[in-house]
Image (cartoon, rainbow, N blue to C red; front, side, top):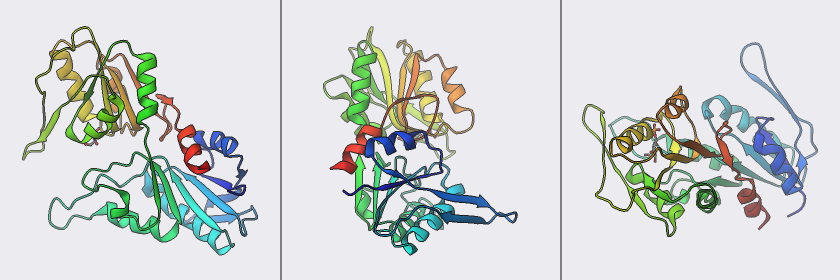
Length: 291
Ligand code: R5P
């Protein structure tokens, strides 16, 4: 690959500087500011004609960013950029993968149409593939899905004594299974009743005595799933758990609530910038882009 130009969007992304150095990329320069009426002004300062472009974008809170991101990619295209790839360590709008009630928007699909229309390729980390089996079911551009499991597994082996892995719901099974390797694990069952109340049931298990429970999930959003699972783990007499997640959304005060729930530690990957970031995804992304 010829030397790429890397645009970080927004400009200050913790992953950005690190990615730029490791990829030996040129920094993409642009000016973006709001007009008084709330519209955006954007100007690209780098010479991008015929160049390989990477846009490292945070799709966390996507509604605030998406239009400016499209202005950026469209302008790059107009200026003659060769190939424009999106690096989105956290791919949003993946959990609305089904029309549950008549009239609901299938936002995962609309969002995928939008990104597919503007970008040439997408690189992401552990998208929430639940009812979709692969991104090509909704994305029409080439996609590269990277998996954080080996990095998480390494972190657990190096930092947790006697780990016993727990997936808080069936959807987490794919991640817990991969992370566990030869470590013991169980997966809990989460059900929501008609009033929206969440109930978690535990399978019968043995061999957890004296072990450190490690909850593993792809996303913590409201924290509801994890808080309930932690509470039940405590009631079962398990030791204070370690919580590991790939995408730390931590909406509202969920991080504080989790910290106060009698846990040992919360550790996250840096797909979304957060003080709990301890597992670095940059080497994973760099190796995929350098392949
Ligand atoms: C899906 O079920 C995921 O694996 C997570 O368990 C879930 O999205 C977490 O959401 P929340 O933190 O809002 O309970």
